[in-house]
Image (tube, rainbow, N blue to C red; front, top):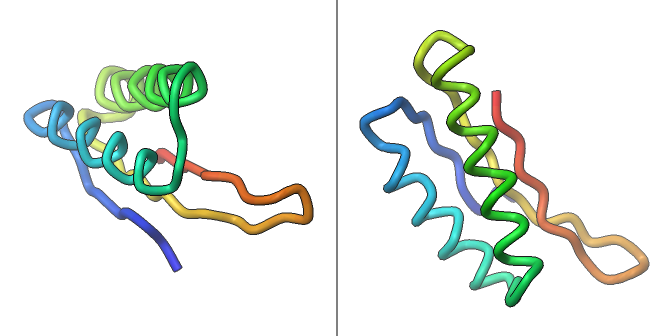
Length: 76
């Protein structure tokens, strides 16, 4: 089950980043890993807007793996 699904454009980048931050924190991501994750997501969001027609879709979900779990973000 997905944690977050957002259609975005330039007008809602800040709101989208805040939603990703809230979901990541709720999944236990903290500290430097949280900062790195948000930086990567932000770069992809901006690239999607600048180079992908001005809009995109973000999906965020958790995958359980033998090592624990991981948070996955897909931006198209």
